[in-house]
Image 1 (spheres, helix red, strand yellow):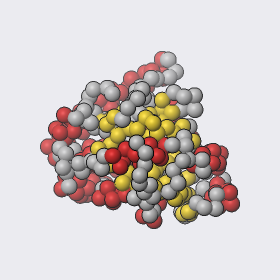
Image 2 (image 1 turned 90 degrees about the horizontal axis):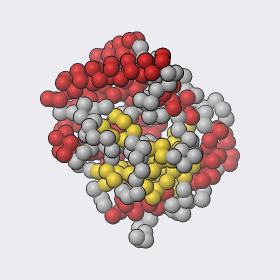
Image 3 (image 1 turned 135 degrees about the vertical axis):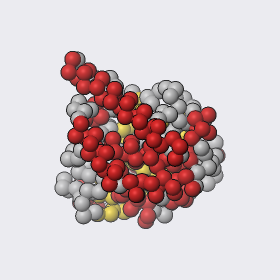
Image 4 (image 1 turned 60 degrees about the horizontal axis):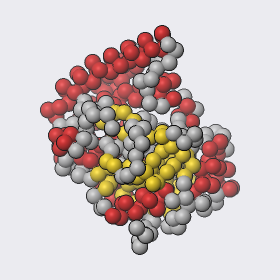
Length: 335
């Protein structure tokens, strides 16, 4: 299909001390075959002179400079707020894009207006699959699929390394949840887009090389804490009320068994195969009661916010959990 429409696409890149990757990322964007774009870079108070580099070498880029590191969700929301495009394309700073990656996404978006989010196929620098989408099981545990795909397929959520969403749908969902700071905010958004009645897909002809985890390794944050409290948050906000308690109980049983297995693997073998990326593997070496308690106290302290979000999500709910299970969007089946 040849594009007859070329809507404006706003590319939003959040940066924190990304100077080593930015030149490769931005120079690859200069070579794409899609003409109607704007690039917005939101800088999380970098200390490596990356912002000055962008202003000097890529003067066409719109820059937003923040006064501290706000993580992933809020900077992307700020970029989306000033974006003029019909589509928002969230792109990590440690990516290198193929020249047709936007064209392939826009083709599919125009063909099917019920698609809310589209993910590029993410490859590692050695050509192996980094991600062909995320999936959510029946109690809300998330896993990254690395299955080979040769045609468009539905996924539970798109990875934020390269995902495009219609701006009006993004606004209907109130964007990324800024309480997340980092980790699983893309999963939460994808889940809510499905609830709203739209689809999330991966487009294998749109290819992006993703170095993966480079920026997050440089940030001094408790990734295990953010990961756990954000997973718990989604179970409270995105399931119907009747499923919340039972799924939280099941999650803690399975989470406890999983973390124990990871700890044993590292103790006996020095590594584990149970985590999906190298930076998750690094942070998973030290499962701790402290992280679990810290996450639980955060949930208790933010329960009013979480329950208000739960009510908002269920007020605009079009697709029930049972319907999403029937579509294998929420499923225990590995995909």
